[in-house]
Image (cartoon, rainbow, N blue to C red; front, side, top):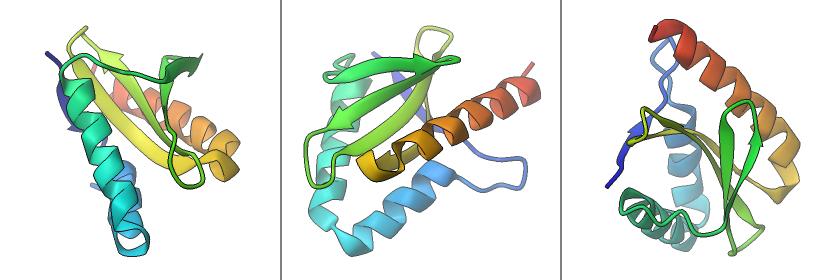
Length: 109
């Protein structure tokens, strides 16, 4: 069993939550798919995922423009949700996820 937490910047912003909230207005069905995927992750089923770099993993959701969830597994049981996006913003999202993970690790030493 995994515990999901959402990364928060030092200013209190939550990039993953902000992305999902914005998407909820644009495509509510996509958010249902994302939430369903996260329920599976909590139970250890990461399904279509791959390692990107620097501790960041990507979950691919085969819906719409190809939604992506970027995360890191911390202490073997915590899934830190960093940011979300789609195929069109993939490179930028991965770079941001790496930046967010570095920030998280620096602040939680």
